[in-house]
Image 1: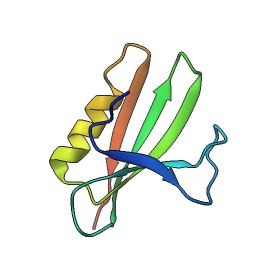
Image 2: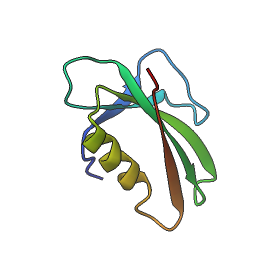
Image 3: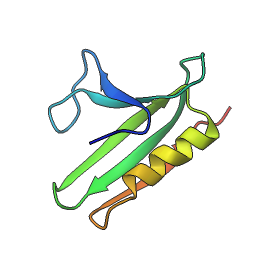
Length: 82
């Protein structure tokens, strides 16, 4: 699978699936937590929260669309409020 942005796991953490907490890294220099994406995968019977760090509004949209690009998966984006 090819991801549209940098994607990986937060070191030293553990999510519900046993892997590290998922992190999307955008193009902004500042690594601030900008938003989270809450995903549901009906095939894997899995629910996850993914962190978005340093993502522009356009990158946030691309990430949300990426997770909504399937009949078996859905996602909502929750943006950080200042």
